[in-house]
Image 1 (cartoon, rainbow, N blue to C red):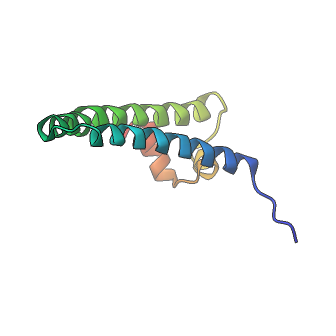
Image 2 (cartoon, helix red, strand yellow):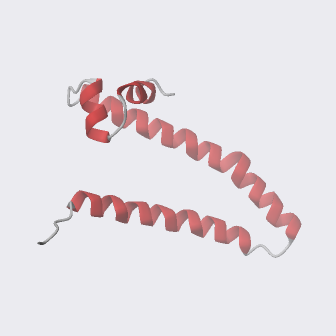
Amino acid sequence: MTRTTDPAEGDRAARRERMREQIDAALAGLDEIADPVERELAARVLADELLPEAGRRVKAVRRGAVQELRTDRGLKLREVAELIGLSVPRVDQIAKGK
């Protein structure tokens, strides 16, 4: 029996791997800083400034995607939840920016 693979899952896996590589490159950049003081300062900037900003941007992207599904495609919360694999309450939270 031949098992078929969902092409979309392959695309998601490739996208996830590219993002993982980019994050790993940023972390490797920290490892390349020889001076421990400079390395700590750079790690602090990453942890205290860049990652929280990235988290805010990710939250905005998720909210926009959910809102687009609701408004442009006219889907109900339940339909969005089924489509993206989350609970209805979680989709509602994302739509509200939480």
